[in-house]
Length: 175
Image (cartoon, rainbow, N blue to C red):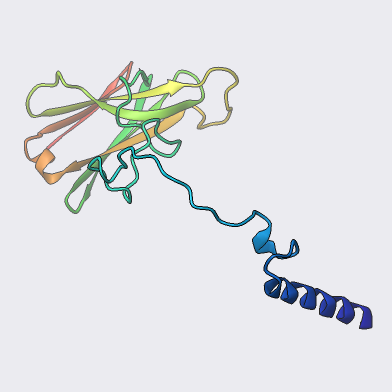
């Protein structure tokens, strides 16, 4: 007990002494040397170029948590079989949710891709996904995948039929 109190007292006095001896090597504030004034380039800054320096620029490469909005064409392949399609009414619109079964296990990045060639009054989607190369997960639901899309009341006002298509079948709901 006496030894630990002694070590603690000596440490406290040593650290307190660092503040009084400004030019000492023991003072942690002197470890990197004194501060110096440095000239800056005369190039225009972000603020002078019309940009606010406090607002960060968007990362063009994207992130692992969100998709890059300028990505190319989605190259997913249609799911083999559409197992179910649900339209869930919510305040302000509806959620269209579709579940499909792929030919092999491991579908990912599943999307409901809108069909631009659908006739007026029909909203047609294709349930598409990428397939993993290499070893696959096994289990009862390893081939199933689900995707959903939000439709507002304004979107639903002109629609009388919603279809979700796969490679082998399609499911449709009408009003």
